[in-house]
Length: 600
Image 1: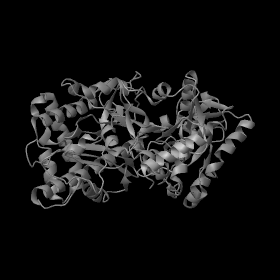
Image 2: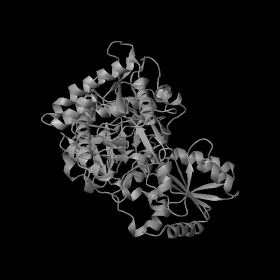
Image 3: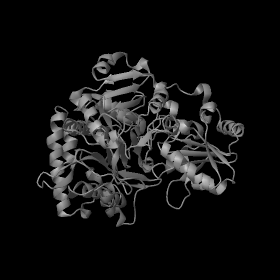
Image 4: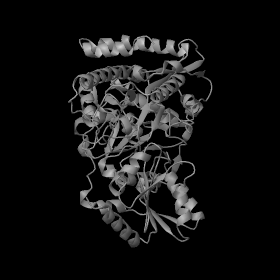
């Protein structure tokens, strides 16, 4: 790979070729994906930073990378020579504020229009114009020019059918739901650009992006015909021809989508689209006939799990919890009885997958496992590397954030444990218990079903016990979770800014935390699902799907009320009931489960 100084020098030379003062590099692809294929990891290539939230600004004398609170420590470790980290938080300038303050009037800022949404390009163009600066679409990606021959090719993995026994709805039923929601929009066609919405619509899955069962494609859905045009490399579809013909799916090549959109525009057709997910380059092909739908139509329908998906999400979280019990029991035993072990954070994560692979319908991890010992736990999205991973021990706190893709659902769980080689400190127990109480407070909320209640209404519940002691965490409390789809799903979530109404069938994570730089990190995460309250027909609640016990070694019983103890004892009883059958014949794991679930 090119040296960092060489890479920046080449980019700066290209700035001059295009008469640019600055260039933007987004952590993005043409489909506004959060997780990227290797061919789209431009921020990582140019700066060294591998997190999922990054935005670069390169000028003739500066190279700045903005990221959020999840990644501050990681960015400080990873950014290569010549780069400076910028924080995405109050008190720090945004990238566009920094540019407007530091570039002279008449400057031009370049951006690849396929890497920025139509809405963002319009908004930032207007902002910069007011500052006498031009935001300029550059059709060739300058990072790709530098990357050149080393750049990985776009994946061409074959797609496969996601059977209705797991999806819960046929393609025709999904067509009808989408068409019904489009009636008021008055559009002739709906452009779908987000990969997880496309795979949901046509009941197909792929392997183009690690951990996410998606494939590169665009789709145009015609509500009056209940038909979809799928723009995809034809090399991917050899094994699904029967499905495509039966489901009224017409296949076109991936790069033909702009031409078809132009043809529809010339024919006077109105094209619905989501300006926040359609990229600016694609928007140019139909901007004269585009109708912004006001929301990502399919995303909202997809987020409300149908009964089959709801049951699948219950099932996958239970079998995943059984695998975690096996892993923790095995690890505790090895750390206690095998002092000469050679397990590190990295190899431990591999051992976890050995347990998980034995479970029915296993498809692989749903994201990079965060296996973090001691001080590495304070790096919120830490990824262990083979050559630098710490050795596992039973004297420090261990934070494990991991997930699995199964054909019948997707999991995401975090447990912070202590394997008992010494006593955890009073501070560690205090922080752990405050995080745990935040998990329980959010899980136990009940709210009226007739109101527009959203994640922003409930975020405080997960933080209040930490706030009482003057501490907090720099990430949202929860994200939406897909069903054999992306582990991060919108529009729902639990955060101060999420205003999407929470509806029956939506799954979200519940994951408050505490992080002490250089010492340890604590996070507890369950997947919870919005459901009708079992007693009150006019109220909703969060059904907890994650039945893996909490670490007894880290709970400060003094902070628990009698009600908290009773709730946890009932939870532990349920863990034993659900997990014991899946641990049949495994005496070591059963013993660990019963000990962790003993009455408080």
